[in-house]
Amino acid sequence: MSLVEEAAKIIAESKYLIAFTGAGISAESGIPTFRDPGGIWDQFDPTEVGTTGGFLGMISRNPGRIRDFLKQTMDTFEKADPNPGHKGLVELEKMGILKSVVTQNIDDLHGMAGNSRVFEVHGNLYRHRCMSCGRTEKSTRDELIAKTRAALEVEPFDIKTLAAEIFRKCTCGGMMRIDVVMFGEPVQEMAESYHEASQCDVVLILGTSGVVYPAAGVPVEARRKGAKAIEINPTTNAFQGITDVYIKAKSGEAMPQVVDMVRELR
Ligand code: NAD
Image 1 (cartoon, rainbow, N blue to C red):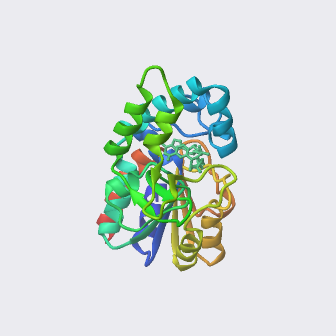
Image 2: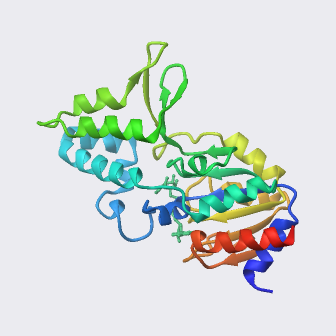
Image 3: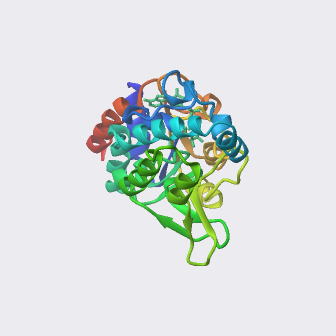
């Protein structure tokens, strides 16, 4: 039996499948991962632009660099659409097998693809959250990118204009910020994610190096509660100690094959 067949059999027999995804599932949509070569992260250190202190420090020291970073980020995210990896998860949900997706990604591609229960432990780039009352407000990708781009193109560049565009005033009077979790900040929807992990009988792990905790504990918790684990990753079996089936492939290439086979087996 091939690895794809083995994975499909486990999935077809599953009563409660969850997916745990990371940056790698969106690589084929054109969004570079943190740890693979190429793209924006070769020019910008994620631990610098990905921390509130680092980001604010760079704003005061080198606003031009922040402008370059945001321009490249907007260019990259604007063009990214769900790929066959994301779409495969939607197919599994439609078949009634996949119950939820726990993702570390902030790119909204699972939601855009059509999955209905998505837990975004590191937030969502197209959502604002009030720093006073916690209320959230979702934008469309086009709206948020258009506003940010307009502010980035003002000459001479003025960081205050940019801040006024991308930060919003909440109805409570507080300040809303883009709802992404920076390094060192508390993760979101973790209780729900661990609950999903404890409910599931199979966890499908796609495109993550499994080094960012506490998110990476989700498949480990699933395994601890007795679930089977399937991992798809072209370079590494990151969850080697707990995987039943490891498919060394890109998720956008392997997922359509797995889904087709699941359909045959149902
Ligand atoms: P990571 O960068 O640490 O690891 C990515 C993993 O994906 C690697 O193991 C790599 O081998 C694998 N991969 C690369 N191409 C793949 C493909 N086509 N199919 C399947 N797997 C592939 O990513 P991480 O584990 O998610 O941790 C990084 C953190 O960075 C996360 O917390 C995430 O929030 C954030 N991040 C998010 C995005 C996004 O929203 N798309 C992009 C970059 C980073």
